[in-house]
Image (cartoon, rainbow, N blue to C red):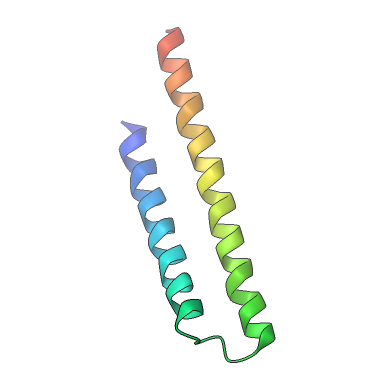
Length: 66
């Protein structure tokens, strides 16, 4: 049951990543500091995705042990 909520969260994080990638690829980063901000956001969002993926795997592993 928790997995559907985590999947929803992962999808929302991916939407945020895609939005920032679109901004980068269309040249919306007006200067270097803004570019750094966008890439930092992407890095943070990807880290969040990895943590959630790890949690999903741990939940699956615990279910298998029961």
